[in-house]
Amino acid sequence: MNQCGSYTLIKKSSQTKARRGKLFTSRGIIDTPVFMPVGTQGTVKGVPNEFLQTSGAQMILGNSYHLYLRPGTEIIKKAGGIQKFNSWNKPMLTDSGGFQVFSLNDIRKITEDGAEFKSHIDGSKHFFSPEKSMQVQKDIGADIIMCFDECTPYPVDYKYAQSSMDLSLKWAKRCKLEFYNDNSSDKQALFGIIQGSSYLDLREKSAYEMANMGFVGYAIGGLSVGEPKEIMHSVLEKILPIIPENKARYLMGVGMPEDLWEGIERGIDMFDCVIPTRNGRNGQVFTSLGKINIRNMSYKKDFTALDPNCSCPTCKGYTKAYLNHLVRAQESLYLTLLSLHNIFFMVNLVDTIRESIGNNNFLDAKKVFFDKYYSNQKRG
Image (cartoon, rainbow, N blue to C red; front, side, top):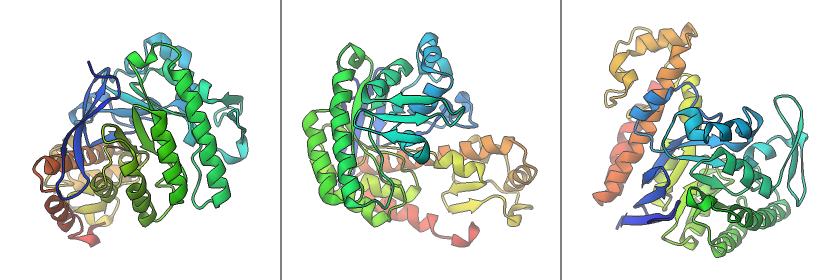
């Protein structure tokens, strides 16, 4: 029987470092590479689960910070865990709450013990230590949980990045001790998180020390926070060879189409991002022919589908003209329809990439995709 969170390598590309594999969880086996829609409050914003199921999404995220504050872990635990509470009934991952706590800036205080913060809801004071984060995530009950860490902004000076990385390493050790003090590992897996900002020597140190701690899987945090793409790529190229080949590699908070291709090409297995739903709420749509903004007047009398190559319910059932009308009239239906389409697009894109690895034609498939995707830049 495979350990929860364990990874099996199925095939490697002969052209790149891209790879296919299987990630084992207590609620099912995930085919990788995989894109995971974000359900911050225990729901993928605006998209009912029955629609989400049809997208092919294998796994979604929940946010520990938000779920801890509302509705509270006691309620989720009493319901039987997050999957029973939200009726998803498939694999889920929770982040540690670190990113949200540290983005509060003026309403939090960091010490070696943990982070004290004020709720953005009612101003009440709370404290997250590595041990507290583990307990919160155990109570939420997701299949994969994350170490409590500090995510630094970009840019940040070297001294702060170094002290932050060292703190995250200390917290990771405490998280591991707390996680394995009971039988939680029977149903959950704990991933370590590599930090170090844009400094390659810090990233290298973090990667080696995290690998030596022996986590089931590894995440790369602190990227896609405003740094140039070249820095993201150089960080991945530096640290991915350090992570054992038989461990899953998760690039946190990254999900633009170009980032999926570039990350997978360098050896990433897992992605999550709010972009499909956030951009959908703003009228931006991803299609095989490039990005478009459905608010634009040019779509007012366009009675074609969003994407001729998409079979999602939005593309099968509605025209650009109708969607343009919904957005302009601020009818809430558009939130669901555009978000659902974008999720379909991202999930299907990673399916295409996974298939190209299996067929050993990754670079050809990448060229075909971008030749179409950038074919009509004026459409947006």
